[in-house]
Amino acid sequence: MTEKLWGGRFDEKTDEGVEAFTSSINVDKRLYPYDIDGSIAHCRMLAKCGIITAEEASTLTQGLEAIRLEIQKGQFGFSDRLEDIHMHIESRLAELVGAVSQKLHTARSRNDQVALDVRLYLKDASRQVLSGLAELRKTLVGLAVKYIDMIMPGYTHLQRAQPVLFSHHLMAYYEMFERDAARFAEGMTRIDVMPLGSAALAGTPHPIDRHFTAGLLGFSKVSENSIDSVSDRDFMIEFLSSASICMMHLSRFSEELVLWSTAEFGFIELSDAFATGSSIMPQKKNPDVPELIRGKSARVFGSLVSLLVLMKGLPLSYNRDMQEDKAPLFDAADTLTSCIHIFNRMLSRMNVRSQVMGDAVLCGFMNATDMADYLVARGMPFREAHGCAGKAVAYALKNKKELHDLTLDEMKSFSGLIGDDIFQFLTPRAMIDRRRSWGGTATDNVRDAIQRAQEALKKETF
Ligand code: ARG
Image (cartoon, rainbow, N blue to C red; front, side):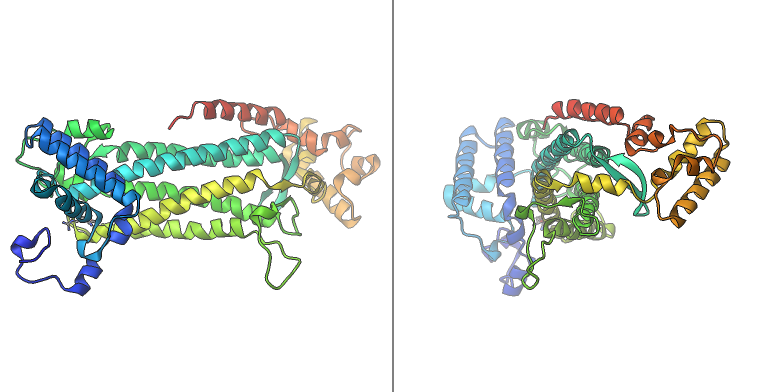
């Protein structure tokens, strides 16, 4: 006989090495508020269904609340011997309230209990991510309003391509983070399913009311199949998938900030509060925060892959392998939340060098497409116009000039269709404001997009 909760069947003591090896308490102790909420709801349901008395329920609830306080105050003793958070709470409850504590585990098992705890945890984590993403989008919209007049080179292949509004570039990230938020909100509908009462895997003979428990815990749905309930980890994988996509966006944005803060680009300067120096090179100001966000994206992708690999070979239903789901899940959720938060603060304090960005647009022949478009508007077929503008670029290159530095006569030598309005036509502002197609970079379009975003953000609730 051993002191373990399953001691009845065992003659020998558990090997100490095995206790340490199988213990997950260091990882899952943070589930304690959810475990206690779940147990209190379970106990109220048991009383409502006449499985335990109201008095027993109240004793159990008081014991559970006392444990909550002990843990909050750091007075609770954790030990590998008790394996996980469920066992810790149950065994402390026995110390506090005596024999009645043994009734709490009626009609449930740790298999449905852990599924419940993680679902409650992920609801909170998703809400936190959603609120962080809303803050980040607010910052982006704020910057887009502030810099609405600023022009920057737009890139393809990291080569200067066509001028765009800096705000248009920022609003591209707004779109990405808006899709991320939609993914987390959508994932919430699958997290929001109550598994408790599925017991070990087959359900329970006790006359429980799972819908009542769900109502108490704020779940919209009750899981349909007890086997699926204890073996489903899709909702975690979905969360990690959304987290990975979001980190990929943060990482791309970080990469741009790293590039933009180089002497080569010089488009931005990170606030001193978000950069670090070098221990050897006194002149250095390093963009460690965006670099680390870029680096931390790898951890989150790793967590997604961990869970996929963890689950892919498991037969139904619960298997102990699944205990390994929590470390990567918590790590990814913590990483994502802190990255969103710090990225947002860094972004709102970065200095933007409008002059450098604006000047960058004036070299690199970013108006060559527009010269061709000018000719097309005057009746020249596009292929021929492309050739004409190409010749103008070659000529200008040879003479170390930009297209807008050519004289009107030089311009006219490429086509008789060219008039003196060509230079106005080729200014960055004119190029931008002509791109009025839906979603294009024209200032009016961007203003409208900003307004739509502001209205959408006003409606956000968590
Ligand atoms: N610590 C376990 C986990 O995280 C809880 C469930 C254990 N169930 C069991 N039958 N051993 O998965």
